[in-house]
Length: 107
Image 1 (cartoon, one colour):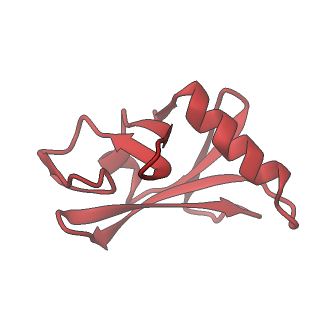
Image 2: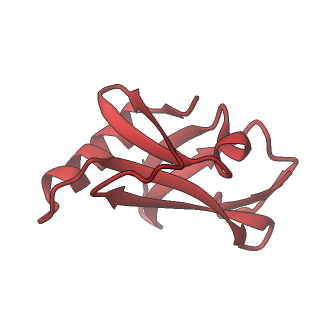
């Protein structure tokens, strides 16, 4: 299961509210790349695919493909705002190494 902080839920809710298209939920995926081997991806999704696992976190629908799910099981997503940068931060218990940017990892 994926966990989201109140800040992350509020940020995603703002993005959904300002979307010009209908939104089914938030897609979270893992792709090859980044400085540590894997990188996280997020986007608002209009519809699910047959390969998606769909679940809710505090009223938000989350869509995760079967390949990404084992890599992000137990992840905590936060949204951080600071003078230097704002964005989502991932805390992944499956990662053996992660990048300083908090957006890539290795297992």
